Length: 184
Image (cartoon, rainbow, N blue to C red; front, side, top):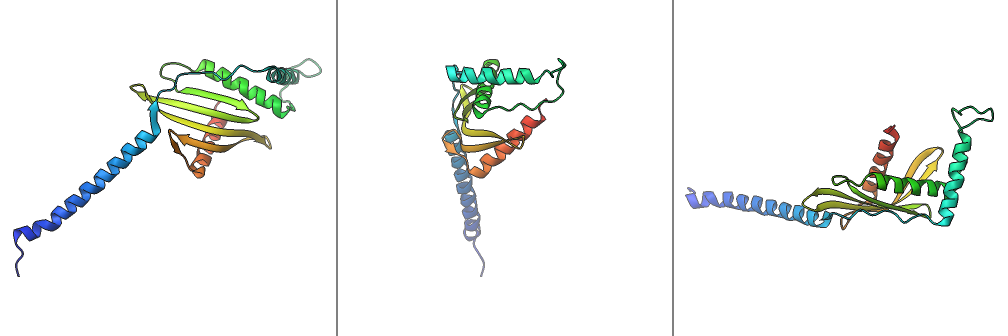
């Protein structure tokens, strides 16, 4: 029994339709992800000015660090151990965050905002992609020193409106710490 030309073309049309449907579904998924992740470029802003208690802790920390730089003989110390309280560490980190925000706010720079409170950092980043749009991300971080090594616990991470899974957040934190360790 011979197949007619119509019968031979039917499976090809089905395959073509299936491929078209799959491509349309993938395109729809990409558009949906873009809508969830891409937003407007955020305006630069700086964390709130330090309160009296934070300024006191910052002054104490800087004094301890300055005193540790000089030996009792009046020479520059090559190495020193400086015990800091958690409040002093928080104050130093908050001051560092503000300094970074003041230095990095050009037109092509990512817009970064971070504020430290009770040992936790709330960070937001807006990475420009052109046309007034950006990929916006936010995270809640808890940095700690464990046996002299920096660790970061991530309490939440999202890109745009999309929360990111914990394992991905851990990988990002590990990469961030590795990058920080390599900088001079």
